[in-house]
Amino acid sequence: MIEKDGPAVRVEDVHKEFKSYETRHGEGFLSSIRRRYKMKKALVEVSFEINRGEIVALLGKNGSGKSTLIKILTGVLHPDSGTVEVLGTDPWRDRETLARRIGVVFGAHEQLYWNLPAIDTFEFRKALYGVDNKQYNKMLKYFIDVLELKEIYKRQVRELSLGERMKCNFAASLLHNPEVVFLDEPTIGVDLPSSFALRDALFDMNKKFGTTFLIATHVIDDVKILAQRAIILDKGKKIYDGSKAGITKMFGDHREVVAYLKHGMDAPQIKGLNLVESADGYMKFEIPGKMIKNRDLSAFLTSENVVDYSISEPEFSDVLRQFYKKRTRRS
Amino acid sequence: MANDFSRSAARYFAIFKISAKDMLSFRADFVLTFIMKILYPLVMVFVWTVVFRTSNVTKIGTYNLTGMIAYFFIASVIELAVFTDLPYSMQHDIKHGSIATKISMPIAYLRYIFSSNMINNFIWGSIIGIPLLALITFVFGIHVSVAQFMMFVFTLALGVLIAYSLEFIIGCLSVYTNDINGILTFEGLMASLLGGALIPITLFPGVIGKVMGLLPFQFMFYLPITAFTGSTAIKSVVLLVGVAWLSAFIIIGYFIWKNAFKKITSVGG
Image (tube, rainbow over all chains, first blue to last red):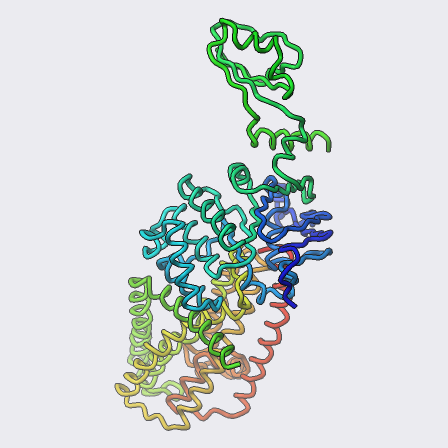
């Protein structure tokens, strides 16, 4: 029954609607008693596959359906229609069996017992997931090393910083060395050193154990560093699925030119040069990739008036912002 | 098979262990709760002493003053086992959305939430309740026969199960309402008043007393205490009433949870 091969995750034509209601607070006496129901489409026709050993980022604005999708994949929610398979099984029907083979980290909901040191939660989950002693000791040692938990995991959880708690939460959730891991905003509000440690651990697990990861996030750095592939959701629809380089390509090959100028300079009039930002002594342009050797541009950049300049590929966050902007305009 | 059993026993033991640790981590809270629960019957001692002295009677109903005082001491011990935190835990999980992380664990949510809450009553009831009960028996010179004790255990078990199933139903309601604290306060008051934690229910006049004899709350306090002290024989038809209530609550709980869980898993907590 358990497939050894085949994709780690298969989602086919999944739909999900929520019934949400609006109370008419503030409209007058008794207004908060009346309610109006409204159907909200959380996921529409979502299909994709994730192979074993992949790291995939699930991107989207707040309310785009990321968390809903993660909850469907972990068997917490059931879809209205469509097929969902994780490791060849239906996460809704076989939730308890599948739970031993997958890992879930909800950044907003910690699994740790607040009043106890994290080691107590580790031991609790060891028994709950039926991890044997040898495996448990191995994984515990692994996480202590890779997440630098040595000074942390025996202290009461409530005394820890958010970053330290997240690291412990990550370890607690993945102690049973799951084959597929779903992360819902794992680095939300976490400081840089801790989020780097989390990323290192994630990469390392992927390499060492072949763990598959699906990361729902809106922290751009997570995507930039971690995932080769990104799936973008917008208003419940899958609007992109492919390499992250592909997102950049969709907008053509663009470069950013930043120039620091002497006072009082106007932007030069060169065809194809597009001023994006400017301040006193600072200008940022956008150019098509083929223009980097443009003679007029070179002449301008090397002229007396320019103190310093740089040409670079655009930031991924800018690309994504434009991506969303374009979508909004089109719809 | 044996392996399966030992593994699942280990899981429940782990839930008990971590819940007990969690509960005992509030040391000051634990001690204060304990003192409060012990002091509560003292209030009743003063009240009833005044009632007996001022009305110049030796007996009210079937109780003399000592019997009445013993009654409230036993009631306070029973209270340790009867009231639960189950609805609060459920409300917290449902309202804050942390139920999602618990549903994603390899154990059914109901089993988890029941076992993690029951340990609370188990600790209070066994480690503190039983010695206290022994002390009360000794101090008040209550003679407890084997039959009385069996009846006490049976009625108390019924009472605990009724309380759990009723509070479970209330916990489920947090899916539908914004806050269940009001309902819980009401239920607590009903259980104390109609169950006999404030006044032995035989002291209520005629019709009211008869109606209370048909309600489920008497199993939480009045019947176990009466069984323990052996002051009144309990008719077997009364026990049937209790079993009927328990069955009804379990059936209602089953359906309401089925609906509530469906709602949770279609909205996501």
